[in-house]
Length: 280
Image 1 (cartoon, rainbow, N blue to C red):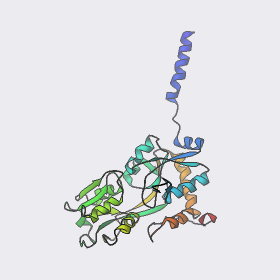
Image 2 (cartoon, rainbow, N blue to C red):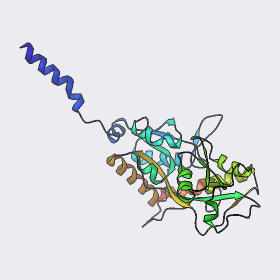
Image 3 (cartoon, rainbow, N blue to C red):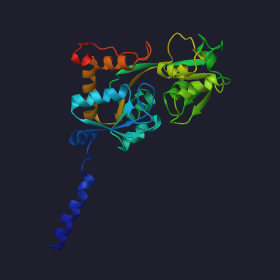
Image 4 (cartoon, rainbow, N blue to C red):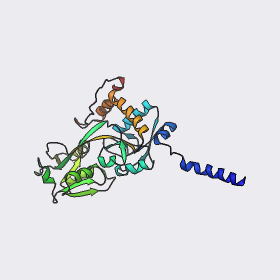
């Protein structure tokens, strides 16, 4: 009898080891809360230094998504962009909700949702510097210093297009404006940035920077939410909600609200867009 009881107890103790781990989708649906990681980027996600209140395009987007899914968004943890995959893998957060570019390296370790906006990344130089225009190869030389942030999309672009240049990597978590400020202060020759970052720097440094004239941008990325690899139910749920917000005009309204300069945000092309009262 004792042997039988021992076997039964052993089986009961061992069962959790063989139980399937609860998915992020199950946790979100059962709790009614999506735990969001975030990072700060001008326009996309910002914080009032006094009240600590969050705002920005992706803050508004997530709040709109929460409404139509009838869940709550919890802004759980501030992250560096480079920490995004690990924070998702270890379930510190359910999603990275502040908007991050869809670069392929990041896509090896996390899954993106449908982008709500696209952003072009371009090279910028000091005003008065007559080098580099219409000559991509001229930037791919050891004597050319290019300022990027380690582990982020700018470093991926630099490695792809300028493997022979001198890459100056700033630490993860560095304010993105520093890449362009390094150009202004002659610590670097080239900085890689989007239109949002350029405007942020130019507002305080008018006339100091100029875009390198090229036929095309160096890269165009979708900007979106990221979730843990292998969560198809969660991805389908959030993608479906996002598609509704795009097609009913909500996203276009939010882009217009947060667009501080023409052409700052590149709208997604959609097969059908029938505005509803959500667009007002």
